[in-house]
Image (cartoon, rainbow over all chains, first blue to last red; front, top):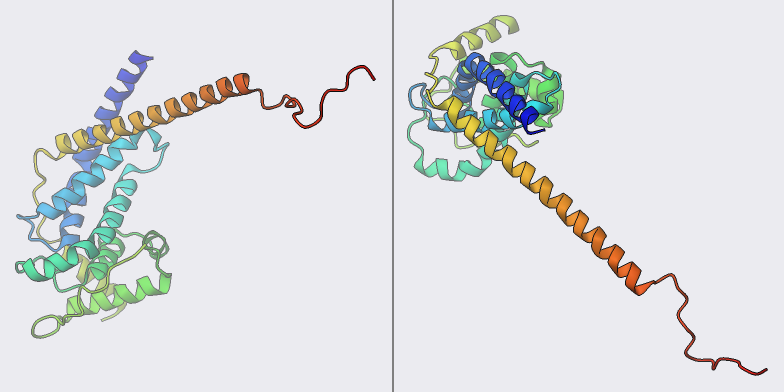
Length: 167
Length: 82
């Protein structure tokens, strides 16, 4: 029994290391896009990613053929969606100038954009993950795309960042 | 600019500037993940233990109190010599 457990945990560690080596770069990029931090200074994105990977590690034995990357991405997105409104109040006051390509967008717009376009998740799946209707996801995606390609002049309006994905 | 072109432009915008993966990411996530696993195991064990204790307590109570036995009557005097 103990031996079986030991061999199982060794196998898990081996597989998980390979998974992290392959997936961490892309997931970290996605997390950095979500948090709108500069690529070389992204403590929040790293924290998000560490949590998502730890969660994936914890349920590694129960994946049963499911894609661990998918699982980690889902956890990352949900964690960001739930964490964003909590931090919002703090960030409004103490936020240093956000940078990164998506910094002018609201957290929900960033989330939808990253899921849909960067990660290539299908519209229906993204909608199901965020608990939104499919049309709403499409609208948010279109609006975010338009904002990104034609950035508004002057400082972003205060409404930006007020709405956050609920799921 | 149609939809596909717009999406391609946004994708290109997002692909820029890949962040460096920190070296301790793997160790850190394994540490947190195994802590989660340990906690889960402990919680499961505690739950089973509680369940066991509760069922033992119930069996002992049932054997001592015997709630299925009809309690002796306290209102009517026993009928003897009729």
